[in-house]
Image (cartoon, rainbow, N blue to C red):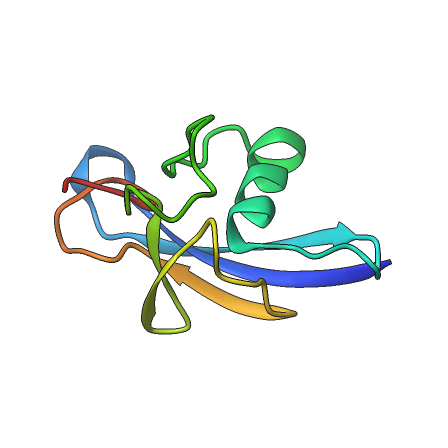
Length: 103
């Protein structure tokens, strides 16, 4: 089992200052894992309050709505391979909540 150590910049309730939250996410060693896979695992298994863009038609790198900053660079979560240690942040200052931004 490989563990991914993920830090996510979260929004504060009531529009206050955001904060960083850490998660540890396990995946089998031989599995190819995207940033979106990691976010989905966090949402399903660890923290259902995490907000990010996810859609059944995603994973085609066509719509661009799953954009997120990965270690400071804007990437598509559906196509970006996960790294063993990652900082995930909103790609824009127009944050709706957590990693979900207005387009």
